[in-house]
Length: 62
Ligand SMILES: [Zn+2]
Image (cartoon, rainbow, N blue to C red; front, side):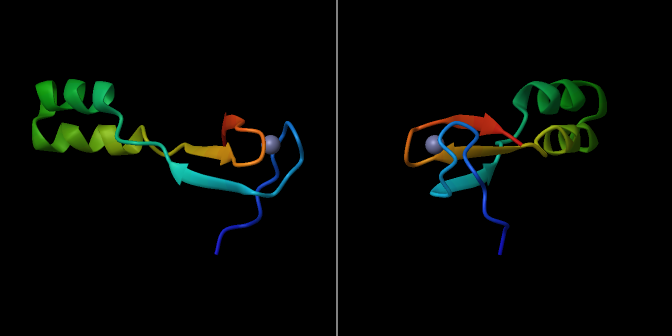
């Protein structure tokens, strides 16, 4: 599975990460110009991962 994530705030490892959702702004823009093909732009723009620390509630992007 994924590597252990360390919280930048408290240093704890009780963290979970998930892929940031579909980028609707970019997806809709792409759809407007390229239709279905453009929708893929939304997925390309959603590569970032968002992490959450269960100990202190810190949220950060990777
Ligand atoms: Zn933390």
